[in-house]
Structure formats: structure tokens, C-alpha cells
Image (cartoon, rainbow, N blue to C red; front, side, top):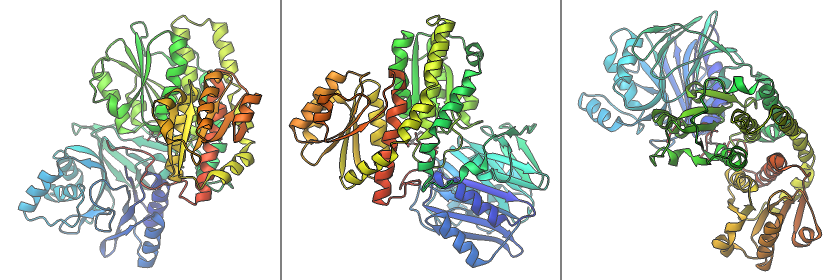
Length: 603
Ligand code: F6R
């Protein structure tokens, strides 16, 4: 993971680097550093911990410069120490480099470089790159970087500066993202758009294998074969103000409350696209099965789509965990439609699954939030979720926006297969357009949910149960709780409980049950009885309450009733708010939970 920022121009580089790093902190936050070109040469400042520690160290050092690179780290090789923090320098101290990715042949390269007298100061895989640039440097930094990365195997996004090149940053990428921007007298570089939103609105997204030179007022780019490329910038419509908390305590809380707009924007933008246009570029006639690939929360959205699409489309539909899918030699080919779901569009497991399926002839639709991301570029067709920038590491508004997009995509596919008439499609879209209002109704229950969190935040374990469509939502509810509150939580298909997890139930075990009139209510009631018979504590989220539910539940949260396809929009916000308030009461770092990163670009 990790985040990179670079700046060259008339302003104080350290300020732009630190503000950019703070906006990229979601990519990793165990240590950070900057290299600044000062009148006395390159100055390196690195600190363990968050960007605030680095900011203080930069202030205390009192240095400034007009060229610099910065980095926030998510450790892969080597502990999060100051020596392992980036930037890394070559033996002469004239070159500094930051890196996001993993160099797989770093051991061989290190041996070779050591035998030629290079001195290493860290345990990172990255450091070999800066020594390779040093070896290859003969006065042309672009050429040196090109030759150095040609020797590396693995994934990289790098930024390199040299004391003898006070007006340029050289960047290269393969497998890890980089965006560049230029204003009339400045040049910028970053891992992701949010870092640069206060300074630029149009960006160049580096392609695989490209090398770029970032100059004050301009960019030069070479393709993987070293040929110069025409640089076309792409406008990104995000508002920098959306990166502020707007009165909420955490970004996660704000983003939970932004869901009605995120869903409405997603539905509105797609509603204005005729389905034929949205699916153009694909040939659906040979498709005999659909495979959704994704990771984490996006996988749960994919699983929702599996439950909705299979009966709708009359085709086998399966949701697959991308990191498993790519290595199991899946039976996909020209008859397969792959739908890859990813907020960032940069998750390496999902990208590799897509590349593998494409190589076997499958067609790919990307459901993506980040404009211009790798998945958006590599898919044959793209469905954008319009959730806007999500800063909280735990996905919230992007999850419900993904479900909105997948529901609509399912309708398009049904229409394209002749299973829905135009009028039926219109009516189904009409029903879907109720989703934002339903979310608003659930958000109004926030005080009740907070009161429930107050009762439950000290418990060390939770079980979440649901059937049908509510099963992926139970998985998502459990994932939200564990990732932000560090409480152990398991999501289970309610019918599976008796096959093992029932052994966990005792008088101090809270069981969160998702109960709906739409999904096997009688069966779920039996599962609740089974919990009750073992003295488990039943916290029931129900969109339909009868005397039996009322009697069984120790704690009950009533959700608005809805139709089956709208269940994700009532249950999800309640589960998110519950996890949020539990974590807040526990005092964990809600927006940046330990060990996590928002964009996962390592396998
Ligand atoms: C959990 C979470 C992660 C991501 C996963 C995939 O809250 O955010 O589980 O869903 O890392 O990320 P994307 O959607 O960017 O591919």
C-alpha cells in the first residue's frame, strides 16, 4: 500500500507534501518521511507513527525547499522503524526515492549491489531501487530510473529526486497507482487524487510501465517501450470540501450519513444512461455464466448481487473472493461475464483476477468508485458508483453505492437478455429509487442505535446471523464491527449455526439477528429460538415485528419495511452505525484502524 507525494514549484514543498500525505494516510500510517532539496543538499526527515509526528519533526528542523518527495508507509518488508521509513537514499546521499509496492527479487539485487560495494541502511525491499538508480545514473535521471526499474521484478510506484536536478521529479509505475498534475508553474505527483485535490482538478493517470518527468508547469511521459506519449489530463469532479468532516466526529460517521446522496447520485447517473449504451462494448450473446470477483466489503456487495441476479437472470451467478479465484485455475472463458467490484479500482487481488479471466477470453465489467483507476481502464465496460471520496478506511457509503449500481446492472442485464420489458425495467428502477429515502429513515434511528451500542460495547465476541440476502449483510455487519472496534465478530448464514457455531452460544454471547418478512422469517425465528434455548443474548434488527419476535428478542431495533431488493438499504446503515458507536465508545481509531489500509495494492 503506502502513499507517495511529490512537488516541484515556487511554494514551500514541505507544506504541500505534508498536507498531501495527511490526505493519503488512509493508505498506510505506521511511519512517514520527506526528502527536501534545500540549499545545503537533500534533507531527509523520517518518523515512526502518524503524519502528525512527521509534521512536528519538519517544523522543528525548520527546513524548507521547492522540490520534495514524501511517503506514508504500510510495512511489508522490515519493521516500522525510522531506518525503514521512506525516502531512502543512495550511497552518495544525492538521490532520494520513495516506493509503493513490493520488489520480489530484492534479495538477489541486494546481494549483487553489496558485492559491488553499496552500503544498505534499511531492511526494506525498496532500498535496492535507489542503489540501482545510483548505478545507472550518467547525468540523465529519467534514463537512470528507466534502466533501474527494468531490473526490478514485482510492483512499484516510485518517485525519485536528485540534487543535481533541482527542477524535476522522475516517477515510474508498474502495478501500483500514480497520478500526476501540472499547473502553469508547478508539478505534482501522488498515489491517489485526494492528495492533490486542493491544488489541481485535472490529472494524468500513469499507465503500466510508464515513466514520467514532473516539471514546474509540465509533465513528460514515456510508455513502457521508452516512446514519448502525448499527455492528456482528465478532469476529476470531486470537491475538496468533501474531504472535511463537516461537523461529524469522524469521517466514517459523515460518510454513513452521506449514503442517501451517494445512492441517489449512483442511481441518477445510471438512470440517465439507456441500458444499451451502458452495456455497449460487450457481446452478451455467448454469456452462460456470471462471476463476480471482489475483496472484503466489495465481496459482500458482490454476494448481494449473486443472491439478486441468479433468480433474475436465470443464469449461474457466483461471487468469488478475488485472491482465491485467481489461483484456483477457474473454469472461465468466452462464455463468462466477469463483474469486478472495487471501490478503489486498484486492489491488486481483484485486478489480477480480472487479468487472468481476460486472458482466458472472459468479458469484464468493472463496478468502480475511483475515476481513472486501473480497473476502470482495464474493464471492457465500467459502471461508476458515485459515492465521491471515501476517507474512512472502513467502507460505508461505497458499499451501499456498489449495491445500488449492481442492482441496476442486474436490471440492465435482464433487459438485454429479453427477460424484462421496457415498462418492467422502468417500474423496477422506480422501486429502486426509494432506496435513498429508506436510508434516511434508518439514519433517523441513530440515537436508538447509539443506546444499543452503549449496552453492548464491552462484550468481547459477537455472532451475526442472516439468511438469503441478509446473509451477506450479516457478514458485512460483522466485518465492520471487527475492523473498527477490534471486537471478534463472526457473520454466519443463520441456517449454518447448528452446524458448529452454536457451540459458541452462552449467556454472555450477543447474537445479532437480521430478521425480515422478506427472507425466510419462519426459519429465522427457529434460529432465534435455538439461541434463546442456550441463553444467548438476542439483539434483533427487524423490519417486521410480530409477537413472537418481540418475545424472543432481548433488544429490538425496528427498521422500516421494504421490498426484498431494498433490504440492503435498511439493514446496512443500522449495522454500520452500531459498529461505529461501539468503536467510538471503546475509543479506537475509527477512521484509521490499526493494521489496515484503504487501498490494498499488495497480494
Ligand atoms: C472494509 C474494506 C475492505 C475493502 C477491500 C476491497 O471496510 O474497506 O474490506 O472493501 O479492501 O477494496 P476495494 O473495494 O477498493 O477493492
